Length: 179
Image (cartoon, rainbow, N blue to C red; front, top):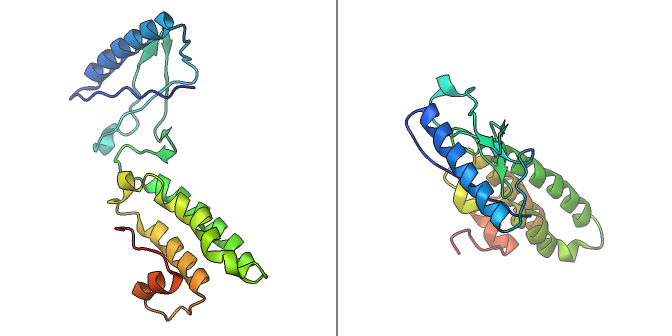
């Protein structure tokens, strides 16, 4: 399976639709030359902008004569995108996933497997939290993920809620994100 993203920018929707439909025709021709078959049913269109009045506007982009389905919040390589590029939906999903994994870690913490807690946390939680972080790390919604990672470090270190946040990384022996 091949994942391709065609992108363009323009001032008017009609300009975008014309450009993307032309690009889709070229891509379709290229695929046929290499005996690949693009699927119009699996291909979507989406638009990213900051104008809320145009938020419900759907693009009319075509692949082999079929109009592509429009998605407002597409997922590309595991990251849910939105028209304002705030990554709110992606970070909400990530925080929920981390909360479920923290619940699993709590069960490990109260078992005889407690000594493998740190490596389990790194594999279960940090791998999810850090996936594509350079893309969304400057979002205003990163605090949702931070809250769950603080819970993870609290579980690993066995500290109380009154422990200052800067000490979590030291007590759980986890390097700061910059490292």
